Length: 338
Image (cartoon, rainbow, N blue to C red; front, top):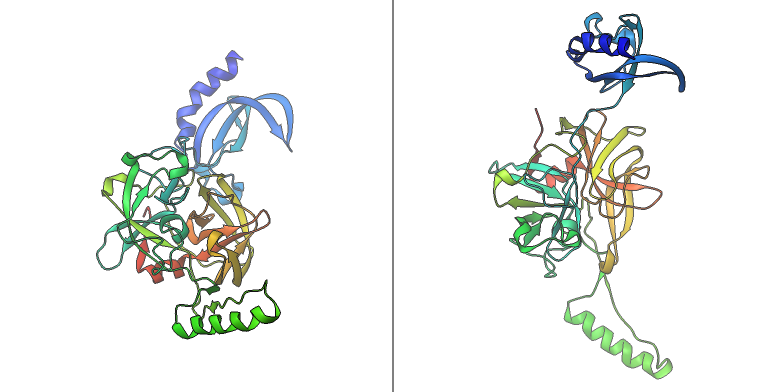
């Protein structure tokens, strides 16, 4: 093996100067998925591209010093982080949550359009306890923990305070008006005569459409957060979902996963825990790419453009709110790495 290692040492600096190369080493040549048993100079690249698409100066030679090369796609290499622990600065993709909930995912950083203040974006049900703003489930200024309570947060782990949210309206709720209360009493008196074990209960149907499950938090210090998503990097911009679009996300529970857009413009009924059902409009349905605890993850295309905010799902599909709807309704802009 001495010969190939001498060749490797001679060429590694030159190879590392290529823009797509992240590493060089020694291994066996793999051809059509089969180990040939031949020693090769292995060139590790962020993305494997056809030779015709590469400038001559960036192309990997077929041989180096008489040894074959093998180009291996490994992606952008990043330091692995424990998403469930306290991280400062905290990157998107880690655990976060309102002090009354278990834990969700820090989605990304956004900027208030009025003040320019950087804020943390995730779901209402992660940062604001599924509030509609009138039910007392959350209030402006509530403490937000990173990591979330389920991940052993302590009082020292407060990363910020709840700034604002888009309300979540149930499909039906208890009526507050005296006419409905009176109708319930009369109905129960009547039904008691013929069906003593029955009880009349009126519910008010919601006429307000939910478009997004989203909220923002003001960090106690700007230095406590960073825009680079774990395993992905900082967003580069925004893109509209298209059927068949390839997606990626970085979440608290399942980490870095990939999926594909299946349906756009969907109206969906989502179970919201003890609140019951809520109907969401203009949603994006993808192949399954999330697990419980991934709620709030930013979902991006392969060019790191933000597409949606992950809010719900099952073992067969994942549901996103359009990122443009999220930004416009909360009056914020995406913080990018550009």
